[in-house]
Image 1: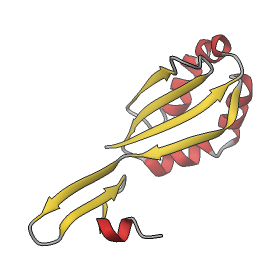
Image 2 (image 1 turned 90 degrees about the vertical axis):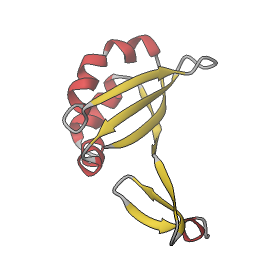
Image 3 (image 1 turned 60 degrees about the vertical axis):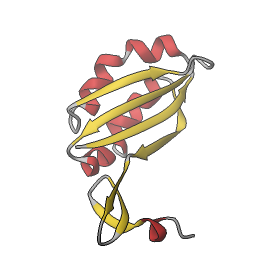
Length: 114
């Protein structure tokens, strides 16, 4: 299970929150659940924490026309910043290994090089 965090601003929170059911329908095509958060200091800044078994499918949904149309009608302001959880484990043989999302493991020092 991958956890994806999407953060963006909206033009009108009331309009955006009333569209929750439509958002659930669209995101639900690639998600088992999601939670909605509102910034306490900026009511037009929102975060969705999305649980998915199919992050690639979720990314494709976010790039398609119905999603773009929903963004416009829900007053979403671009950009949408998308982040994936970084999971780390300490191993006896390789040291600290971290991976994002799909389980691709790399040593931490390789992960942090520019």
